[in-house]
Image (cartoon, rainbow, N blue to C red):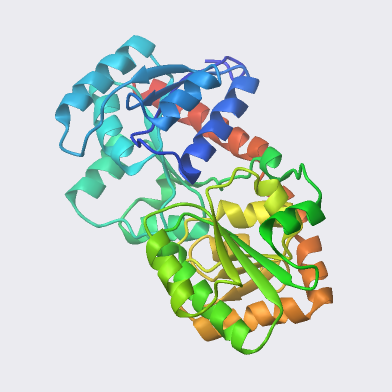
Length: 373
C-alpha cells in the first residue's frame, strides 16, 4: 500500500460515558478525516460517544460491551470488523483493548491500543496475551504511562509515545474576563483559582479544599471555583462546609465554557493523585495561565516546574497551600509562568502532531502485517 493511500480505521471505545479519553478519540478522528482517511467508531448503543460520532457525521457501528467476560460481544465485534475490513483496528479503552483485541485477532486484522491510565499494568497471563499477541503496538500518552507499561512486562519495542493534545477551540474565550469573573462571584482584588476536573478521588480536590482553608486562615484574598461533575460532589461540598469556606470555594458543575473560565482565572490548579497526562493543565498553559499541579504521572512531564507552573507532592496540603500563596502574592511569577505556557503546548501537544504520529504507526503496522501474511 502506498503511503498516500487513504486508510479505513475502526476505532473501538467500550465506554457509555464521555470523558477526556473520548475527547482525544474525536480529535484523532477529525484529524484523520481531514487527511482523507475513513474512521468508523464502534461503541455501545446509546453511548455518548456513539451519539457524538453521529452528530459529527462519522460512521458508527453499535456493539454492546457489557464486561470483560462478554464473549458474545467479541463475536459481534469480529463480525463488524469483517464487514468494515479496516486497515488497522484502534482500541481506545481497557475493556475495548481486551474485547476488541480478541475480536481483531479472530477476524485477522492488526490492532493497536492507546494506554491513558497512570497505573502499572499487572503482570500476568492477560497482560502477556494483550500486549504480546493481541496488539501490534501500544501508544502511551506520557513517559510515566510508558514506564508503567514497561514495569508491567510490556516489550519496550512495542511502545510508542504519543501525547494527548488539546482542542484549540476549547481555550478560546467568548466573553470578557471581567464579565466571567462577575458571573463567578470573584472580586477584582481576589486571586481566582480554577480547577477543571471530574469530581473523583484521584483528582485530589479534597487536598485543594484543605489548602484553601490554610489560605483563608492566612487571610489571602482569593476565590476558588471547581468545574466538573462526579461521584465526590456531596463529600466535597461537606468538606467545604466543615471548613467554613462557602464564601471562598464554589462548585460550578459541568461547564463547556472552558476558554472563558481560563481567561477569567489567575491560575489553574490540578492536585491529582494520579494522572496519565492532564489535558486540562495543557489547556490552561495554552491559554497562558500558570499551573499549580501535583508532580505525578504525566503531569510531571507536561508541566515544566518553575517554567510553566509549580509542582508539589501529591496529598501534601502544606506544599499546595504554599504554592498557591506564592502564586497569589507574586504577580510577576504569574505573568512569567503563564507566558511560557503556549510555547510548551506548541512543542508537542497539538492535535496535528498526534494525528501524524498515529498515521505513521498505522502505516508501519500495516506494512508489518503485510510482511507476515
